[in-house]
Image 1 (cartoon, helix red, strand yellow):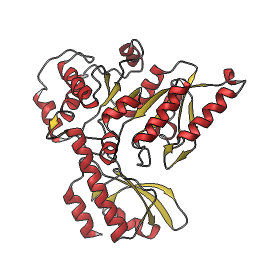
Image 2: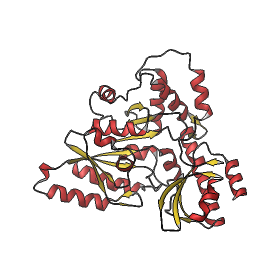
Image 3: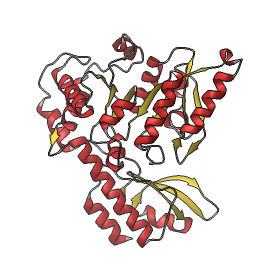
Image 4: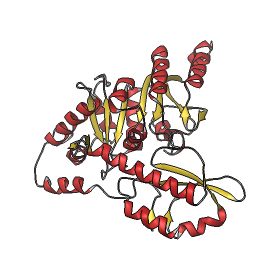
Length: 345
């Protein structure tokens, strides 16, 4: 059985575990003042080419989205996103729970389109009753999207320009950032650091036991972030636990940090899976995803047989006879597992 339900159904990369064990007996300061976290921040700044970036380590993605969006926005502001966005669909209203409205706009293949964003903002600010509405204060994107699709560098620059025109902050959710960067032809960490006001680098889904690195690349984070993160219950006392992990993930590993190497590995296996499903089994892609999330339209008569060999997620029905299913590779999936899958299917 190969488990492709998600990219966080595994433990941690062996190098991460070894480093955690090796440093376990060392006593350090807490709340981010340890040398592991400081070194990890230095490595991330270098990878982003953002020497002045402010960085905080949090535990998980939903916690990070809720805390950071609340810290950045004013009490009367909301956040604009694609209707398929994680904060709108799969976070149990965590952002709204902080008091900020999530304003969902129609998406195209999981992406928020610049024209739709521009049109909505123009209409909002032209409305004489806008003062009675939730004011937009931020645009939220995920890279890659919930459907595994990618924004191009030009699309990110265009959305950035709209945000600048209307005085909005641009926030990029990077829960699966390693896989998006691996699959992208023109988006890099330095480009993301130039375009976004704040983003996070997801560790939980790429090699870490837990942990996300929040980056304010322009060193313009709201005041008293440590206090505000603590108000959200998101401040790690043993921050070194995440610092150590990111220190390993962003250490030199040949020509690239381990984090990016793991992303490339998962995407390469996803492309092998695509060849198996499309060329050999004849399944149709639900959407053209170049990343580690793959979606296929499966005949219902095949589902039970597939379940004997693969763990996957049922995404949505297509018609009476077909279902869209999601298959997710990760850093932990092996070539041998894909070999075995090709053999049994």
